[in-house]
Length: 92
Image (cartoon, rainbow, N blue to C red; front, side):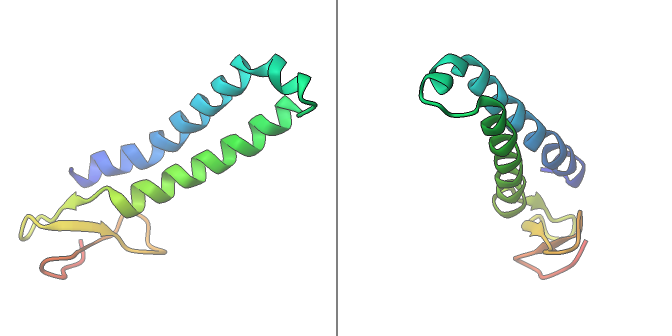
């Protein structure tokens, strides 16, 4: 995957995951009310958690192809869109 596609996935992936979670809460609205669970609070908290977990998963499990050696590069912690190759060790 290129770094541009990785950026797009790390931006739109959490948004899509949060929207999917909100849709699931909306479909189960009555069941949540019957069990005395506040659907709006569940939607807010669940959307935030699913977005954070999705961003973490993309950062740690989706590699970017190294432009120098073609190896797997992963995002450097605390530096958005900077990648370190696990094969050659170069930063790009």
